[in-house]
Length: 108
Image 1: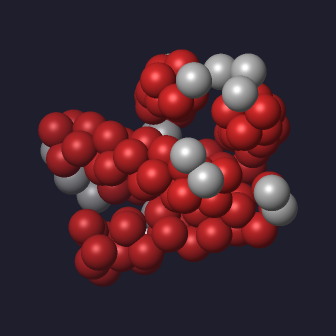
Image 2: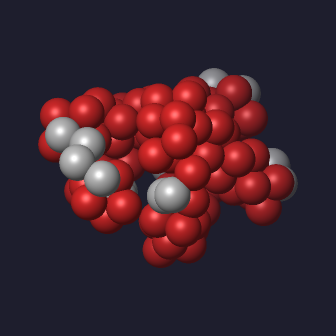
């Protein structure tokens, strides 16, 4: 598994999700997304490697990712008046996207 490529793909996919869900407002939060991914990279790598090695289950991996959900702080969207509910749905979409992509890459 090439984690660096996976990480790059995840970041790109999340940016596409931002653009899809928030349109023009999404253009303003690219830095927020990049900041989140930079902060989460080490943990994501460790957890993904543990999942791939069978040290943790898919459910445990999902739980670990959900524990980071509050770190997906989209300051710019919040300032733009996007509701907390819509931001919450977006955070859930990010977690689902990461899980789906990682499971696909590691073949689970």
